[in-house]
Image (tube, rainbow, N blue to C red):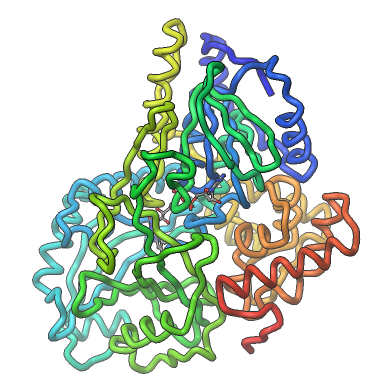
Length: 565
Ligand SMILES: Cc1cc2nc3c(=O)[nH]c(=O)nc-3n(C[C@H](O)[C@H](O)[C@H](O)COP(=O)(O)OP(=O)(O)OC[C@H]3O[C@@H](n4cnc5c(N)ncnc54)[C@H](O)[C@@H]3O)c2cc1C
């Protein structure tokens, strides 16, 4: 931990210098930080900012604040991206659906952020042509889609432009589409990402600039006394801060914020089902209209898999315990079958699934039984009487802009408390998440190892590829038909803040979601490496596998030993 300091010209010069290297983030770093916090006698002064929650919202805040020279500590109850940020539809999009709700400002902001992410996270945000068909009897006929997408183009400042195709053109692009009643389709651009990886990469950038992140550290209490703001962790560790921002997603509640947190959020569950690409061989992301409600669902190609989703139903209870159930299958399959009648949409062909809970900002007191579909996806920044700030709602897509708003607010408060202090402006709109020259087409063409690693690691893939070349046992794939390599397990353990087996199998690499056996074939070997790095025993390996099995069963409805084929 460091002492509080002012932002000096030397700091600013340092900020303009080449980015610092990725610091190690293994089990020993975690143990050291936990001990430093526990044993802190207060001599080093309070943190500038404590962020509660390491989802995409907390990650964005930590990165922005660290880049501005603030001393930042992130406290996360579970693993990073454990919550909604590893359970989304994985789209970086303006949200065509929100136009129908008149949310023009939100769409504009999201499209602007999409453009920024193309530049700052190009390896993680891949543009794709989305095909949005219209059928006879649909709520949105083709002409309305064209009007809506013309507005979408304008809101993107014509960074992307839609086009319209007739029924034959639509089927030429997507032969699986039902013919009956097809009126045509619009094709427009949005992007696909890896939500958990975007969160991790944002946090790693924050660490490069000095932020400290402690996972598996639940905040149990927050408040103010004569000495300022305090944050109490499970186990009793007390941390002091000039400012605290709660970014606990669907967990943001009265418990953390007092009266300000009461009725702040409405929770809504959304699930996704993963199938083999050969069962649902769509050529591009498809948008499917849901009749009788202002909803759409997506069918998204994902390498050797295709995922389908999502649902939107009011949720109560622990946001970490939501899971996919029979009612979800019964809802989703018929919606998609109407448009893709030849695809074998059967439960037995589903490889995996995931379930997330949206933290939606309420506009009024709760109304029992009301739908969550029409609740705005806007975010809100609130502050309670103790000066604890919370940032809730919003989208994965808009996380950077949300974070800027929160950190501007924090900077203002810090300057008010110390008028001599200068805090630089936000730079996250232009600084890439991973420094280094993007991989070239030639590099990717000539090196299959790099080609496998690049979509998750960007320029850092070169470092991993070099390591795998020096240690050939790290070069192999974990599972034949998926691009994940053993060097990524090594990276996850040494540089990506993993502590439990599920951190690796669910969030560093999406094996729990993409592998037909959910990683069963490699789980023990990975657990052994992890436990070895943590300094544990064979019994710990068994405990990790049991823990992973339980979490997998709860979220996806699958057992680790299920072999889907
Ligand atoms: C089904 C679904 C589909 C979606 N699709 C998209 C999409 O395609 N595109 C898009 O832009 N957005 C999408 N979203 C929205 C987006 O995923 C969320 O807005 C975003 O992930 C919320 O992130 P967050 O960091 O606020 O919350 P979370 O990711 O839930 O993070 C909160 C974190 O706080 C931690 N925490 C909780 N309590 C405590 C505590 N007491 N102490 C310490 N830590 C704590 C949790 O463990 C968690 O890691 C989707 C959401 C859902 C549910």
